[in-house]
Image (cartoon, rainbow, N blue to C red; front, side):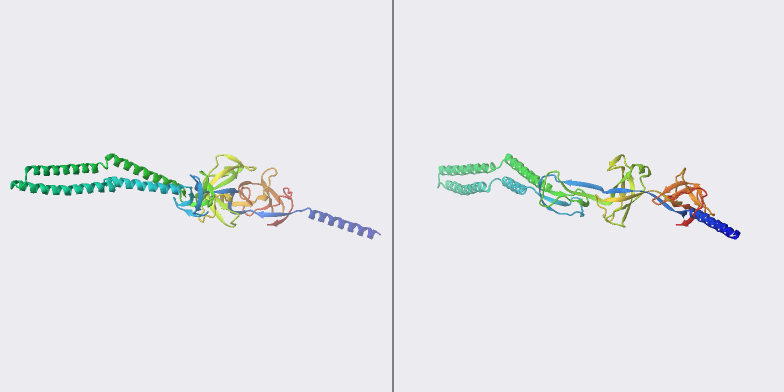
Length: 404
């Protein structure tokens, strides 16, 4: 009987000891640890932005008219002065043709006056003068013959006198016709004709200038990135025709949340990505900090202007992009996962000890990125820190460590 009681007591003790052991073993938590490592840490402000041309001009119609043809396409590179579109203003060509005809008439009138008058008038006068000169020559020969006959007493002095009078009469007629011919064109007539020609030439230039206004030209060299004009559509004065800009580099207006603005400074590097071209990146620099904070939906942002290289012209104005401003780079930084940092009564971490207990260690942090943070003070290379923020730990607590 005593043996049975003794055996029962021993068995009960063993069971109790085993239960206590299992209870203690199950109370030791399994904790994930990560070692501190050195690496280059880049601190970025991650946000979004919109692409704009660095230099651009919006072109508008100066006169109303129907778009006769559009000579370029969106994305085309154009030279300064190149015709982009042509307008058709009703009746303008007919007005130019009429002005050209009036100029030709004025020029012909001036040339007629410079030549002495109308050809029909001058021909009639010149013919009469020619006939009178012929008659005078004949009268002169008759006078000469009469004077010889008088010397031989074969003619009378009266006949000689009549012959002289006949010559004088012809001279008077010739002189009158010559004066009439000179009077066909006066200095005043020439001046008026020259004035009419200048007026006609000015009207032609004016009509051609109006037609040239209907040829819409680019005021700068660049790329067409917006082309609302369509052939066959009617444009009023001031309606948009096209937008031309320089697309390399481009300007990116980056929207930075107000709390992050203090980290942004001119000259910092910026990376741009576009969801439409995954895997593609563009680089640039911060050009200008914002001068004010504005509302953007539910956000309060500053508009940071960045200059970004765009050699292939893939980024077009109006594109919504992702922007990453590199605000800080720390070489050879001692880093740990962000999840390892705890803020219970101060900033610190739980460090794994050789006896598989944890020790609370205050630290000072520095730069950080999306996953890791720099430890400026408090840790050494290779220290294993708890990366399990969801596990409640105490200083000196026993743990079952597993390394990431």
